[in-house]
Amino acid sequence: MFGVSKRTIRRRMQQYSLRKTDLYSAVNDEELDRIVSEIHRSHPNTGYKLMRGHLNARGVHVPISRLQESLRRVNAEGVYMRRLRLRVLRRRQYFVPGPNSLWHIDGHHKLIRWRFVVHGGVDGFSRLVVYLTVAGNNRAHTVLQSFIAAVEQYGLPSRVRSDKGGENADVAEFMIRSRGTDRNSHITGRSVHNQR
Image 1 (cartoon, one colour):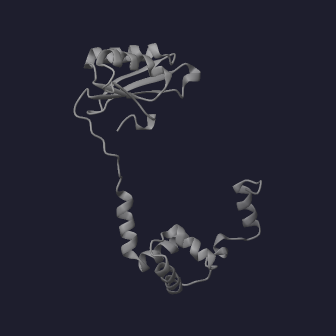
Image 2 (cartoon, rainbow, N blue to C red):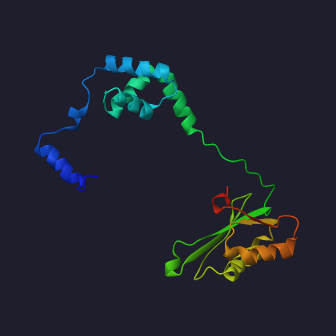
Image 3 (cartoon, one colour):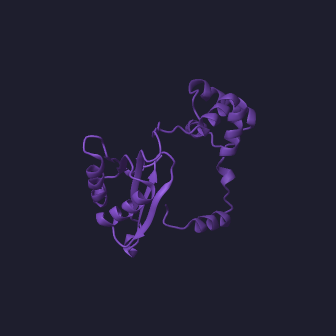
């Protein structure tokens, strides 16, 4: 930020006897609780980060640890409720009727400069990895070979979902030829939604 390393800043602070604690306001716990309570009345859904901004705007600078302790004293119920809400992970609804109903396929291209391309397929119902191969290229024919090997082992899925990459074109054509056209035999979408 200043064109110097953090170590240099620390050395200069030590050299001039500067401490971070000198930057904090000299406010006791009761006074801090009163200010936090006052801010909390006008902004009831404020967490510690926003509360710190409100305090800084009023010229009150305290360490985060002291602010968190004050919030626990002033609004213990709110802190507890926020913790409960943070632990709840909301997932998209995902339903697959059974095994081989839907396979998700995708490729991983991060190692392509070293001629390693990882191709994989997962059964959407059981999350079984039906195939996982490493190839030296990202061609559609290579992906189809891996897919057909998995089909021979586990059976033909009803539908396949993949991203819109050209490497999946042969699999899409194979599925449409095998299962038909007007039934979404091959579904395309963003690869972040390719699995549950």
